[in-house]
Image 1 (tube, rainbow, N blue to C red):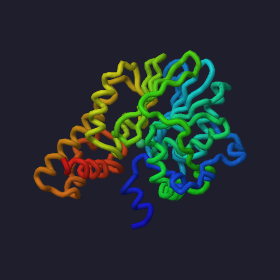
Image 2: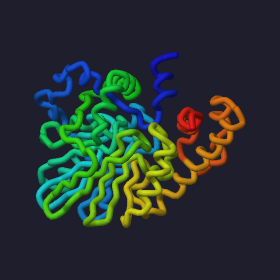
Image 3: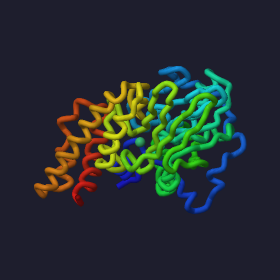
Length: 327
Ligand SMILES: [Zn+2]
C-alpha cells in the first residue's frame, strides 16, 4: 500500500499534521525562519462579516489538492478594540498568507492571538504565515501531543497531496499557550471564551464563544452539508453535542459548511447522522458481523444528505466500530 493510500484510509478527513520534531527535540524546525513572510503579496481570501467584527472565510467542499492549496476549512478572525484573534489558519502557508491579507484589508490592529480549534492540517497548516506577528498560538492542552504523534507523516503526505508549489513554506507551529479547561482572552472590550472539550471530533477540540455577538466557533465539532469526520469518539461527540446545544448562542461557525448557521438548529443533521451510525454499528456488533460488513453498509441511508459522503462514511463507520465493539 502506498503512502497516499495509507493516508486516505487512515486520515483522509481533515487530515492532521505533526510535530514529531517536538518529540525529537528538533525545535529549530518550529522556529520561524527569517523572512517567513517575504515573497509576492498574497491575494486576500474572500471573507463574510457574519456579525460586527466577526469575519469568516468559507473553505471549499473538497479534500486536499494542488488546485485548492488546502483551502478546505472555514477560517475566521475577530476584531476587538485593540487586537485581532485568528481562529484556524488553513491547509498551507499560502492559505495562511491569503487569510492574513484578508485581515489586513479590514484592519491594521495587531494580530495577538492565533487560535487552532484542533490538530487537523486544514486548520493549522497556515500558522506559519503569522509567525512574524509574534502572536500567542493557542490550543487545547492535548494539541501539541497530538501534533507530535502525527508530524512526520502528515508533513510528508500533505506535501505530496498539494505539490511543492502549493506547499511551499508550510510547517508546523505548536501552541505557545494551552487551554487546560477554560481561558478568557480580551481583544479590548471584547472577550472570547475558549473551552477545551473532552474527546469528540478529535481529542483536542477547542470551542470559542464571542459573547459580544453570540457567535460560537465550533471548529470540526460542527459540520454542515460536509459529512462529519470522526477522529475521536462517537460516544464522546454525541454526549458533547447534548451539552453544546444548551449554549445560548445566536449562531455557530462550522469547521466545514456555510460561514454561519443558526444555533442549535445547525447541529441536528449531524446529530442524526452520528446517532444513525452509532445505532447501526451497535446492532451489527451484537449480530456478530464484521467491521468490513459494517463499513460497506452502515450509514447509506444518509448518503444524499451530505457532500463528500463516499470520501468519509466508511472510515467513520470503521472508527465507530472499533470504539463500540468493546462496550
Ligand atoms: Zn477536523
